[in-house]
Length: 384
Ligand SMILES: *Cc1c(COP(=O)(O)O)cnc(C)c1O
Image 1 (cartoon, rainbow, N blue to C red):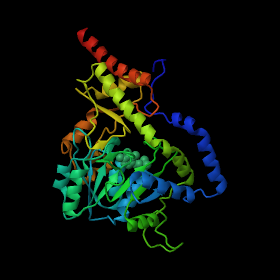
Image 2: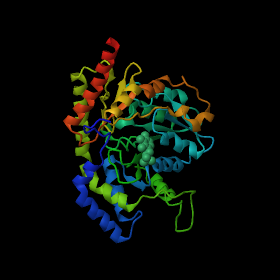
Image 3: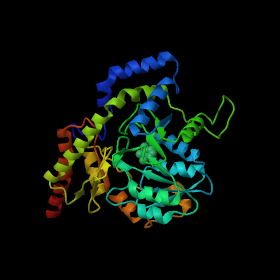
């Protein structure tokens, strides 16, 4: 790495230093209260997040992965059932399905949005389909109008994997209220990031909300009488109190991410990279929250670009290098390379550039300048 200051992929310190006093006071209050798991802080956060998502109930849990598992178990999905999901997403979307004993039914993605392709979803509906997992990747919602039509026609509920998209909206409706159940993550790198693991399920169905809240505590109701086969999926009060300090700032931070997204767009143009970098597309019906700013690198140069950026101290990441249908632990499903060509091509070309609300114009310029330097170096080598 060179000596000049690099640019991190994300920066958790910025928000912490902004809110340090409030966060420390809230944590001290929770520790002094002795109520460190669930309790009033978690209940308050549940109400605040549910309201933000336009849902009537929130159920705080240990992680986004737990939220997905709670949603699937609430719907009593298990062996013999099928759940449709994109092959291009974080592993947890598929892992949570497979771990219920149901079969993950992969579909390909849309090449522009990287979200699941509704035509492919329609083609995979069978009498065993129990749910469709609408993953909203990178901060932009899936094509919900098409998914709603399929869901209605076949009576199959939609579970939103909104782990990357809290604050996103589709036709003005917030992520979390676009399906039967919404699943959120507060993993530190998400748009509302905690200082540890945490997640939440949101829904407007009171019966499901009650069942999920019960599943989260070993299916226990009353104490030591177990109605459902639940497990421990509880949320820590310390995480909840810190998230409550951060939540009132989320809209402003999303605005800063969107501004950073626009700035990358114009820098990429300014440095004449539009032929080799395709920039993220904002769909007309969507509010994109830029949890990630992902470009597509042309001509099989992505991996060389990653090496060069890392060497120059620029944080970057590939979400995701291998589609889920080709993951070792899912090979028993019998999928082959070539089956989902759009997702497989995305795995070879996508690149996430550093983005976080506090990123400066100078940092962004440095990122794009370094990308441009990669190409001029290549051109010079070819000329030599
Ligand atoms: C982060 C993420 C999850 C899992 O959330 P955790 O809180 O890390 O368990 C699930 N799905 C997607 C799409 C994610 O990005």
